[in-house]
Image (cartoon, rainbow over all chains, first blue to last red; front, side, top):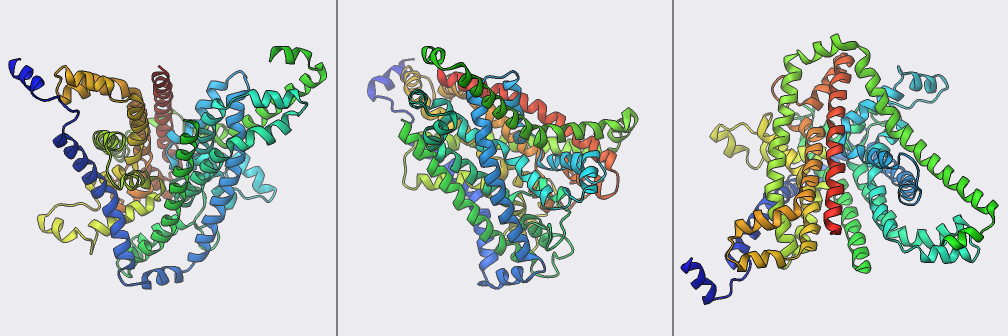
Amino acid sequence: MVAAASRLSGRARSNPGASGRWFLRGTAFLYLGLFVLLPVAVILQRGYGDGLTNLRDALDTFGAWNAIRLTVVMALVTAIVNGVFGTLLAYVLVRIDFPGREIVSAVVDLPFAVPTLVAGVMLVALYGPSSVVGGWFEEHGFKIIFAPPGILLALLFVTLPLVVRSVQPVLSELDREEEEAANTLGAGGWTTFRKIVLPALRPAIVAGSLLVFARSLGEFGAIVFVSGNIPNKTLTAPVFIQQLLSPSSYGATNGPEQAAAIAAVLFGFAFVVVLITEKLISGRLERTQ
Amino acid sequence: MSAHAASRPVRKDWRGRAARASLVGVALLYVLVLIVAPLAGIVYYGLRSGLGAIGDTFSQTDVVHAFYLTFVIMLIAVAVTTVFGIVVAFVLARDRFPGKSLVSALVNLPLAVSPVVVGLMAVLLFGRGGWFEPFFSAEGIQIMFALPSMVIVTIFISIPFVIREVVPLLEELGMEEEQAAWTLGASRLQTFFRITLPNIRWGLFYGMALSAARSIGEVGAVLVVSGLLQGKTETATLYILRAFDQYQPERGYIVALTLAAFSIVLLMAIEFFKRRSTKAMAR
């Protein structure tokens, strides 16, 4: 007690002390350094230690270019479709009162909780060739599972919450006076949305869609099951990388190094997209504050 | 607002209502086709084979071990990412140093990396010819094709969730209460457990639940590092892959349905924590 009092009277206690700050800093840097920085460094060193040889070998592998093209196209389509429907869902959830709204809002979050592989299993159960729905489509000449539409469904499923959750908070904080003014001046619902609401939501929609794009580039669990993984047709880049690592090609060639070279390019790209998104979101926050 | 609404012609209001109803209809249809119907599909296929098949599936030692392994990995990953996540969140929210935005970019990096690439990173570090392979094989410690590598990749993937939830809460909270406790003679740990933790707990739980969901569902990264040893390094998700590969779809559907059911419980926890957290923020 006396000691505490004397400590208090001696020098104002600053919170937290320099030693505590360095302890926290050190722990945080060590944790992120070991678990994040080191793995990234090893990808670059092993993939590009011999210059571009590994990248060239990887791209020369059967089906490599088509896997990359398919992945980028699917990610783009997913970003656009979920950009539109995610915005619609956010609008409906924030602005329109209907019975069961809370349940729909929870269902939108379901893809955050459901394992991606289970999402793939679900889609096969409903839209697979041996199911009622998928069988009907197949009879009419439209293949869903083991074809690009199945890949698209899987990506749309796992990325659905991203745009909704990015747009929703902006929409619920939006001042409604401007909309009411437009309405009073005779603008219809669609005109008001296009001229007033949409411009305000644009950064959030773009940020959400970019996240969808980045996430779709890397998705594995949901796709591996629904795509059938046919080289040059339904094989995506993450599955292609996994196959470079699978026991058959492992050890025989420089499989891991090739995988590292190609992964560094694809996911460096995705990382830049995520950084841009973060900038967009923080820029928006600064403006509202 | 109500005055305007009343003066507006009735026909226009009717049209507005129809437009709103069709918006809701389209949104519901999208959620139905994409999420609800597939969920119903897996419930149907999981239960179709009857209680006997379900009992049979859960009496397989492989299945029991797969669930056990999934939960062990999840517990370790959530514990590590929670404790260290809080530390990183403190540093990001309270500390100032050059290169801070770089650190915060590092935190978000796992969100952009494909799970397969995360597995690849572990292979390059600990696998044949890896940076640390000579050290660990000399010590006789098995990292690849064993629990350690599976835990490491799962931690990598779950790193962002706690940090991303806690940083904004700490920033919002400010330091006044903590400083008061500190001035009154509380130790650093006392201040943290009595003042800070209660204030951030709902956001923290939210992040932990997201972390748990991600850990349980991980497949790409563990597939690459596990070596697929049945009954040894096979998690629940890897078991599903094998069940379908070996033409035992009933068992695959039953295990998948169990994981789905568990994730729905987790989702309810997530929704609860989220609501509590936003309420606490509003206070």
